[in-house]
Amino acid sequence: MPQPAPPQAAPALDIVSLRKSYGGKAVLAGMTFRAERGELTAVLGPNGAGKTTTIECAENLRQPDSGDIRVLGHLPSDPSLRYHVGVMLQDGGLPTGVKSLELLRHVAAMYPNPRPVGDLADRLGIHSFATTSVRRLSGGQRQRLALAAALVGSPQLVFLDEPSAGLDPQSRQAVWSLIRELRDESVSFVLTTHLMDEAASLADHVVIVDHGRVIASGSVAELTGSPGPGAGHSTIRWETTPGLDLTGLDVTLGNADRAHGAGDAWELCETRPGCYVATGPVTPATLTALTAWLERRESLLGNLSVNRRGLEDVFLDLTGRNLR
Ligand SMILES: Nc1ncnc2c1ncn2[C@@H]1O[C@H](COP(=O)(O)OP(=O)(O)OP(=O)(O)O)[C@@H](O)[C@H]1O
Image (cartoon, rainbow, N blue to C red; front, side, top):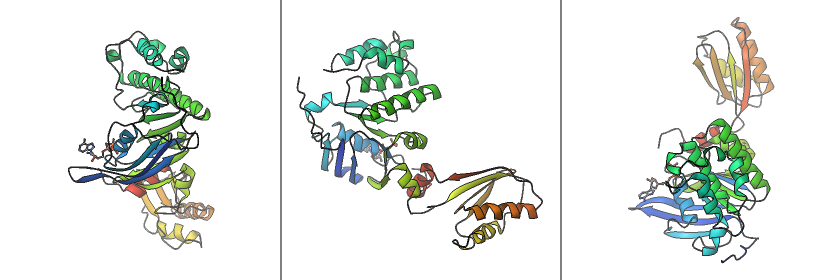
């Protein structure tokens, strides 16, 4: 059984200048990023951005036209990677006629150093459908079994494609806590997801891709605090009298802080009758100005909250709001 130890110094995944076209249309246009060992790297991007194509090139399921990929320091086609890399595909990719726990035991037997199947089945709640054949599993059960199959061989690097899509909140928590635990044991993860809360909650490093290349990367804190459209902005939500005329409120809020000009990039709207949202450079002075503005309208303030700009705001600022 070939088991050359992957070079420890090499990153978990190193992708350099990847290019691929279909019928003359560039799908990957110089994709370059790195996933470090022992970290969870989340790859985010709109539909069709090139995430799956990139990851499938790293999994040796597709061939790029040019560029370089190293997985644990090896070419994706290196047969030794088989024992070090776990893959969870979106459609599960599991044989359908086998019983669930039997399948997991079978996969475990293919590896030199598998995780204890019983423990993994416990953690992911697989015992409750252990004797059900894969074809009869619900979507969420199949998803958990696919994750278990990707982890059972004790891989050093795991590719996860939307691991919690379709999972109920209980299963999602169980999956996230298992992933965190393994990451803390130095397992590396590369995760593609459309769930910003999943990326924000799990990722050490986030890579945002669009049109076949990386457009931003960093930790969640770096991305949400980085310069760019909307940087330094927060959202104020409050409830009060429905139907207030908001004309001039942007100037009032903008004037409240001398560091910002009047009307400086404030977006205001009444989302539902009596529920208001203001997005802009919030300071303590802004909140004083807002309450004074409401007082002048004899409106009683309720349910005031202030939220920092989140990963989803950054994602939308960078990739736009148009459907793909
Ligand atoms: N075999 C193929 N033949 C032609 N075009 C393809 C093929 N595979 C992918 N594409 C195109 O490549 C582009 C990128 O697809 P890809 O699946 O990598 O995107 P993605 O970022 O994973 O999207 P999603 O979030 O929707 O899963 C899309 O425009 C897709 O239509």
